[in-house]
Image 1 (tube, rainbow, N blue to C red):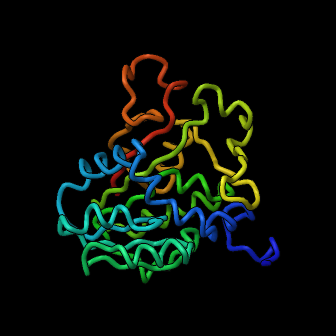
Image 2: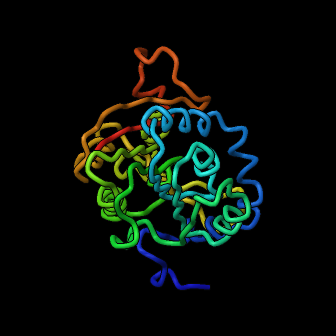
Length: 238
């Protein structure tokens, strides 16, 4: 077992175990297929990525975004730290214009990932990364990877959803048992203000904010959105 001090930046024991779980990978696509949030974030990305171009998927998992946008003419590059996820992604890719790379989002090589038209970091991938400085590094890497005018879509969980985040209100970090075994997985939950501050701090201009519910689109957004929103989809431009 890799000692904790040798784990990559932003990766704690819980995330390391999650990324290497064969059972998790085996059931991942089935979980995404029935997830209302997975459908909503694709629709949101379609709105902000209307024209085929180069798309960078930060934390691509098994490449679901590539299977969605690849047939539409996008040149897709998926990045993930899980070899198990990437192996499935390679087998399932929809077109030859999809490629995958194993890399830590905290330490992306600026020479290898640049001049993209759009980028995405979905399904609270950013929240899985431990440490504010490491999450900020991911956002800066996303910004640097885009050409001027490029667009970025981010999903984060809401710290105040039904009071959930009150258990970790000081840090926003909530540890939860993994269904697949291993150490507890810690997920950072953002307040909307914190998320916008981080996105703007990386250099982006925020263009759109969409609160989402656990079932997909949040209805009656005017009614207590701070407590009712399961998370937020944020669109930004370089």
